[in-house]
Structure formats: structure tokens, C-alpha cells
Image 1 (cartoon, rainbow, N blue to C red):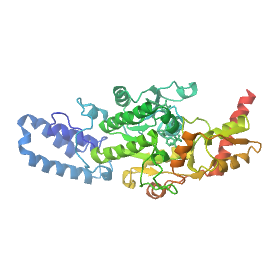
Image 2: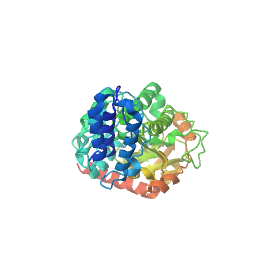
Image 3: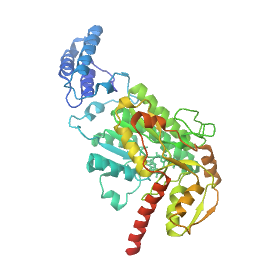
Image 4: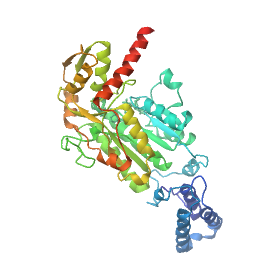
Length: 423
Ligand SMILES: NC(=O)C1=CN([C@@H]2O[C@H](COP(=O)(O)OP(=O)(O)OC[C@H]3O[C@@H](n4cnc5c(N)ncnc54)[C@H](O)[C@@H]3O)[C@@H](O)[C@H]2O)C=CC1
Ligand SMILES: CC(=O)[C@H](N)C(=O)O
């Protein structure tokens, strides 16, 4: 629970916020009533009697928590901390952002939503929560099909005020933060990667804390480095990545967890492996080869791989990745023993992937032209990812192994190229 205290807080205003946050749909009468009487008495120098206030406050809270009429889960409301908001709010924005009509469905904002993963996630979430409850945002111009498939809004995560306005005006309750520069493009432009991945994240964290949002930030296998155990890599171990991307993701993991413990932010984070998708292009990472091979196999029958044939990395089909994201966002807080989890599906080398691809396109010709930057990155990343905690805690389970992944990719891309040929 996050309680934001104004510059001159009064017992009444604190209690009204507390009542609303404990049960936004139906503030508990004893707490709400007590808050009202305190608010009325505020003119009478009520701070003089602090002990009475604290005693009555604890009594009112415990009544609320024990009340069967309160629709809120008691397990998620313990008063973790009553602290000052990370960026002090001068207005009553946080109070007004809690709407009494927010009931069944979350209102979701996805940042960086036009990359490899965002459009697919929006589709999945819209199916579950309704089209208009999921807003895609990015700094790029959306394709027609994306623009007409549901709400889209321009949002630069470096613009704090604009981001805050979007969250307030759209009564956002879940924020999925996808904007980032990935590993290879990050090394090519370190200042921009630092700005987007680190400064941008600070904006996101503050806005999420200020407005009590549930926040998802993906991390990556790239958050580990050459001194981490690589086969397998557990959730908790040495993390000394050697890319700006990896450093920024470790920073995101630690800052998110810190905000969780310090301000009660509902921060959730999964470390994704390399993600393979058919209908969206990767944005400049080290694992991109594993998507490119499918397109080249179909288009030209020739593929040049930029990693060595025996470079083993953890990978996952996009549907599994998006399902995991929704599952962890919906998981009851009491199941989460950690706030950052590894997830995995399979591990393979380019050689093994090519063998599987050649079962579908036997004439595929493959050459290796190693990119030293990407190879050095891949050599420092996990080979196998240990995701036992995600499986134990909230029931994570992947559906796609290597053969299913390859068949699914060809089914999709084959159908697409047949449609293109027919037109
Ligand atoms: N695709 C993958 O294999 C993996 C992805 N992830 C993480 O998942 C998230 C999404 O990944 P992808 O969709 O693959 O990334 P992507 O690189 O395809 O897309 C990132 C998006 O962020 C946007 N962006 C850049 N600067 C921005 C700014 N200032 N404001 C708003 N948006 C901005 C870009 O326009 C782009 O559409 C990222 O955080 C990434 O680190 C983690 C592990 C693996
Ligand atoms: C694994 C990732 O985070 C991403 N695909 C990259 O290669 O940079």
C-alpha cells in the first residue's frame, strides 16, 4: 500500500485516502466515518492528541481487514510503509486517480508497444479485458492495422508530464513498460540507451508509485554476465553484465524491488529469454538471428548467421512469453515470493535450430559470418535458464519446445507467403 502525504497532511485527509485505498469500490464505513469526523475536527489542532489518533486508526483498520463485507483481499493490504512519495506530489492527483468505477478490468497502458512484443500483448490483453481497456503507446507511427485494432496514443517515456497526463486521463491501473533499446542497438548508441532504459524507467517508476499502478517491467537473460553461473543460471546469483542494456535491466530489477519494499509499489518483473515471433520483427538484439532464419528460409533459401554455430542461448516462442506476462500480472500477490523471476522454455544453438528448420526447408543454405559485438554478448549470457521458482510459485509452464516452435513459425509464415503470392 502506498500512502502519499501532501506537504501539510492532516489526519482526516490521510484517513480518507487510506479508506479509499483499502477498498476503492466501497470504502469501509467505520474507516470512512472515522476519517470524516477527523476531517471535521481538523480545525481543532487535532495533532495534539496523536496517541488517540493512532489507537483509533489501528482499531478502524483492523475492523476493515476483518470485515467480510469488504471485497478487498486482506493479504494484499498490510501497511508495509507509510512513506513520502518518491516524487512529492503537490496536487491531490493520487487521490483523484482512484476511481470508484474501476471494478472488474484493469486499464492497461503499454509503453514501447510497437516493438516485437507489444502488439501481440495488446491483442492478448484486449481479448481478456476488452479492446478499450488496453492502450498501446510508442513514439513511432503505428501501421494501419495496429491503429485500427484498438486505442493508440503517442507517448515518449522521457516526457514525464505527458506520461502522467496519459495515466491520469485514462485512469490507468496497470502499466506494462516495454520501451527499451535492446542489447545490440544499445551498444551502438550508449547515451540513448542510458536515457531510454534508465531515465525513462525512473519516470515510469515514479508515475506508477504515485498512482498506485501495478507495474510490469521485463528484464532479460542479458541481465547476467560472464561471472554469472551460465548453465544453468538461477534467479539469484552474481549479475555483472557487460552491456548498457544488461546494466540498465539490473538497475530496473533493483529499483523496482526497492520501490516495492520502500513505497509498496506492486512491481512485477520477468527475465525473458530471446523471443521468437512470426508476425513482428525483433528490435536489434543478440538473439535476432533466431527470427531471421525463418524469414530467409522462406524468402531466399539462404541464411547468414551472425553467431557461431555452437552458441547456446535460452529462447521462447512469443505466445509463451505473453502468456507468462499475463499470468504473473494476474497472480495473487501472496503467491509471489520474489518480484523478479526467470522464465524459460528451451535452449538451442544456431546449428540445432538450423537442423530443425531444414526439416521444413531442406534446401536452406547456411553460412556463418560472426559479428564480434553480438558474439561477445552471447558468450557472456546464460546458456540455460533455471526457472524453477516461477514454476513453483505461480504455476509457470511453457507450451512450445523447439519442434513445436519451428512448425508454428512455418505454418504462420507459409500461410502469409501463400496469401502474398495469391494477391
Ligand atoms: N524481444 C526479446 O527477445 C526480449 C525483449 N525483452 C524486453 O521486452 C521489452 C519489449 O521488447 P521488444 O518489443 O522486443 O523491443 P523492441 O526494441 O522491438 O521495441 C521497443 C520499443 O520501444 C520504443 N521506444 C524507444 N524509445 C522510446 C521512448 N523514448 N519512448 C517510448 N517508446 C520508446 C521503440 O520505438 C520500440 O517500438 C523490452 O523492454 C525488452 O528489453 C526482454 C528479453 C527478450
Ligand atoms: C534477449 C534479449 O533481451 C534481446 N532479444 C536481445 O537479444 O537483446
